[in-house]
Figure 1 (cartoon, rainbow, N blue to C red):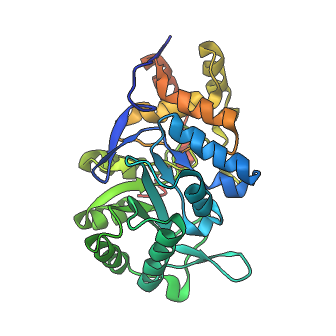
Figure 2 (cartoon, rainbow, N blue to C red):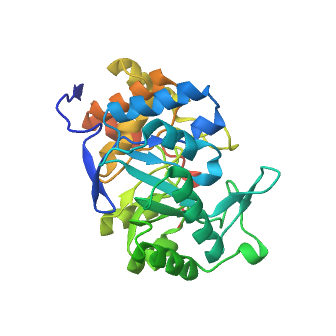
Figure 3 (tube, one colour):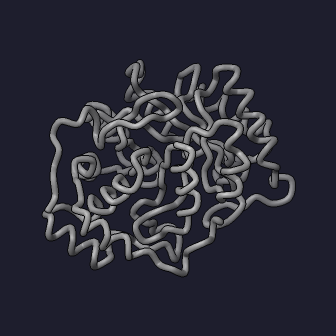
Length: 304
């Protein structure tokens, strides 16, 4: 059995992010760049999300044109909209993604995000650490102490240029080290099939830190990352409930922690509707327990 709520004030209900209430269903802009859509279609999709109650948009200058699309679609911005960006990488002149971990580079990226989004302040800036794959790994001069990065971001926060500091792709030890700096949220890969970041989530729960899982459905872009929607148990539950496998996977994430914020991205208006509707799906305890058993044990412990 499932229950659909119709009176939520925002998709998925509300949770706090850097002191501001946001809908628990947000929007990740990266797919607007990874799966390019015609410009007018991208602008319409962003406006559709905001009309549906989404007020948390995740982006980054190094994603490409996402910030410009957000500005063109939504500025002047709604007062309750929280724009969240990410720093720690940059684009080389040839367009390839390269590490940019040094404090001065982090500051430059914050300034670039402010300029391209057309704002004086970012709601949250996430520091993307590059200590381990998948994705970029920092080497040589790009291997920077976390404390020096946090000090730079704290200075930007004190100057009013960012509202909160987040972390991305961190271990439980790094989160514990960073907590005294005041951490608004953590973004780590996490899904019903990949619980390797469970110790990090546990520490977020302990300290009331918002949890923003990326790759909530897996990722085709990284070999070995399981596709949640292909799992037979997820698919069977979806069939029983007359919903999509993606909605089951997103609802499971929301059920696990009341400060989980989802930023599932899409370039499809229909998929956006489905993602938002996942906020109204309540899985029965037996269904949650069944999904709890699906994590691959070999993945456990990578981020301890």
